[in-house]
Length: 101
Image (cartoon, rainbow, N blue to C red; front, side, top):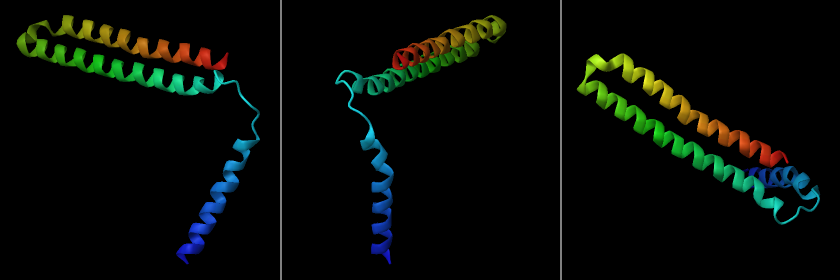
């Protein structure tokens, strides 16, 4: 029974992969665009995540040292996190425009 299940799973995978072979040829430079887009977005998102973690850690440490400065620290924390997140969004938009072109 297991062998029959493996046979049907293999046949299903082969039949589902068939449309991929029906595509036309692509130029050698164009085949790297999706990979570069994925790597670029992953790099931007990862570094923005690290920057947001560092900003949050610094704000938490500042609040622990001086709890009275909470309103000022909070405003600059939110502003900084918004700027950091906008970098990831700008990267996404640029990659999206480059892939579509």
